[in-house]
Length: 163
Image 1 (spheres, rainbow, N blue to C red):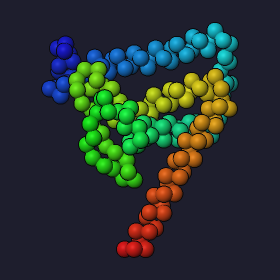
Image 2 (cartoon, rainbow, N blue to C red):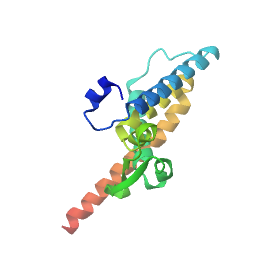
Image 3 (spheres, rainbow, N blue to C red):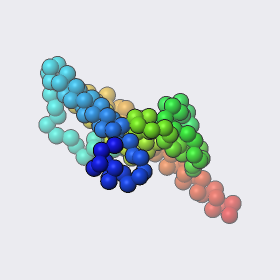
């Protein structure tokens, strides 16, 4: 680790090189999409209506929760994380393991806020190429989010009746 990174890290052994690699992969993915889209004549939308922003935001939120917290997607996280705890509604809490790039990927796939940036990036690229398809996918994730809220509301009403 360089002297500047050591001062920044302050002994926590942050995988700054791994983070840089992941940021480069993200940027390269967005850049590659932009080049391919331009060559294929994809025209960017003149504007993005606020309801599409809300839909993509809801979809990015739920996609990030599915990747980082669902039991069923543990197979994605297992090479990079270990189970730390059980959360609400059968969600799981994983923590990163290893060092270097492995730890950086573990940080990414165990953090819904971090993963949401990647999900939003994918949705924005998809929206530029195919807004109708992206709205459909977004609507699916939004419906799942509403379903989750209804599950929580139902559970809360049952607990208040029982308690």
